[in-house]
Image (cartoon, rainbow, N blue to C red):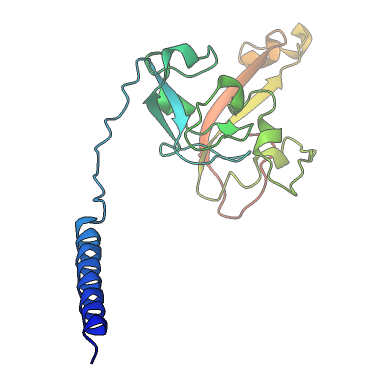
Length: 203
């Protein structure tokens, strides 16, 4: 074998070995970057506590104790319509109805809620597909379903006694009411309803 070819072959092997060594060193030295977890400190909110929704409240939702909570709010973002903690009784808002859609975490405004008896309560309480209608009732039918056999009720009787002349009352033993001037005196007595169910004429 020619000595020149042998020298070239040995030189090529040396170069290949050196190249492989440096390549291995570079791969081993470049380790994967370690992810460092940095604890984020919660931002301190300098402001009053306002009333916010704990969950999404669609229109017509009747509020309970779990639907609302107080949460600190930035002072510069506080609106006059918000419910502030030092001026709001949370129990008084239970039973009110949502008039406008409220998202979770959104401050509740005074115009978004309506109380029973307020204007717009019925419209807010009606669900989709529901309609409100008026039903005529009488004095007897107005208590139907509320008075049952065995209930104790008060009977009120109002009567007018006509004035009688002296000729009709010759003796002192006549009834005092017959010689008295016309009166209208209510009489209240307590009684129990009959065992059979019937609508009382006057209760």
